[in-house]
Image (tube, rainbow, N blue to C red; front, side, top):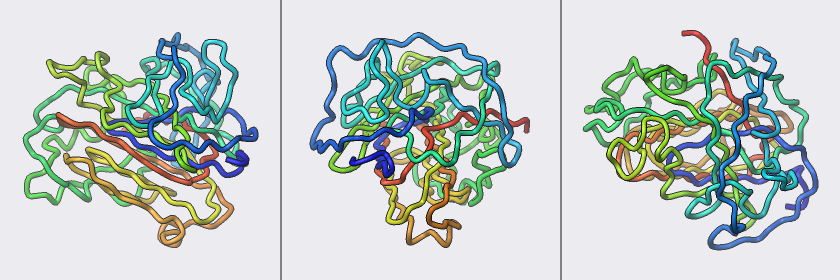
Length: 337
C-alpha cells in the first residue's frame, strides 16, 4: 500500500470472525506476498486479559456500541512491540492461520463490559487487524450438529434489525437446518448456559495487492467454552463483525466458507449463504449494487457480517476485499428482546 487512505482488506476464514478497534492511519508500504503468509518466529504466546470499564453511547436503532481500548483494537503492540496498523508479519501472540493471516482469542465477554463512543466517521483507514465476537455453543442435535445438511437460503430478513443483528424469518427448505427457530435470536447474544462469548482478533496478511485472512482449518475455540465435545475440534460457534467502510468506487468483497454466512451492507442483505454446507462462495461488486444498497461515493456505511460453524467436520472462512474500512470493529451489546 502506498498510503493508509486506501486500505485493502481480504478475509479467508472457515469458522468465525470478529473485529477490533483502530490504530490510526500512518503511511504504509505495500508488501507483495505470494504463497504462504510470512510469519515471525516466536509469536504464539498468550496475552493477559483486559478488564477495562468503558463509557457508553447509543447508536441508531437504540443499539449500544463499544469502542475497544488500544489493547484490543487495531494492530496494537503486544509484548512491547511497536503499534503498527499494517504489520507485514504475524503480530506477536497471534496464532498463524494455515493459509494467510492469524488470530488471537481474547477474554471471555461478560455483561459487565462497557461501551465507548462511536468511532469518528472521518477516519480514513483503520489497519488490518479486526475485532469480532465469537460464541461457543453445544451440539444440540437441532441447530448445531443436526441431521439436516444443505443450502438453506432466505433464513433471515433482507433488512438488518434495529439492534444490528439478523432477524430470522423461517426456512423455505424441505428439510430445514434450523429445528429450534426460537434459539436463533440468541445466536448473536450472550446467554448464560447457552453460549460463551469471546473477543477474537483477526490479522489480515498482505497478499498480492490485498490483505487476506484464510484458514481451511479455522477452529479458534478448540479447548475453550464448552470444549470439543469428544471431537478433534470445537465445531459449534457463531461469529459477528460490525465495522464501517468509506465507499470510494471500484470496491469488491468476496467470501468463501461454511456454514451460514450473511453480509449486510448499509443494513441490507448483500450475501446469503445460509445453510449447513461445504465451503461456498459469493462476491459483491459494490458499484454494480450501489443503487440497490443505497450507497453514494464519498460516504461511510456500516458493514455487518455473521458466520456460523454448525457441523463437523470442516471449517472454512475466506474473504477478499478492497473495501476501505474506517474502523476496525465494534462490539454491539445485546438490546433486551
